[in-house]
Image (cartoon, rainbow over all chains, first blue to last red; front, side, top):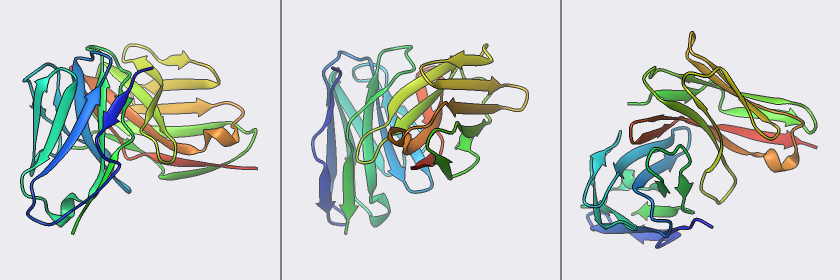
Length: 112
Length: 110
């Protein structure tokens, strides 16, 4: 079974903190994605990566950065957390050229 | 910006009836259009995709229709079951990027 693992299910952080969300996949997928999910807005793409050390901005990259030093790991970084970054964060991976992405269970981040 | 969207945020269906979930898209350059299902507390799961040069594709109890003239995508679920209750997302794939719409919550009535 393909497994995409996000390091935390729930996270509470303070405004201004630097936050790291970690995602690991065990299927040697080339592509990895970070989305945030908010009611009424669906899944919005923050960043994606199609290879180690490669990253591309998605639709809402402001306030976020990413790191992909190893193929299996894709990290999302909130440089200075703000309350409007309170959301459900979903990581996904897929084989290059494939339409099927496999998602983790999500991290519900609350910034207070 | 947002290029994929769904017509209705909620849909209530009687068990055993057929469901139709609609989606409008704006990016004609996408290679594929895809439907995902998200059950409560889980990440989205792939249901079915359709290549941009096709009009119809059938899977197990599901059919996806693509109308490029009006940029419309639909998912039909036959004989809807309680396990079909979920949020359904349409998505589009272009190059490496995978973009999702806002989602439709389907509730199946017993």
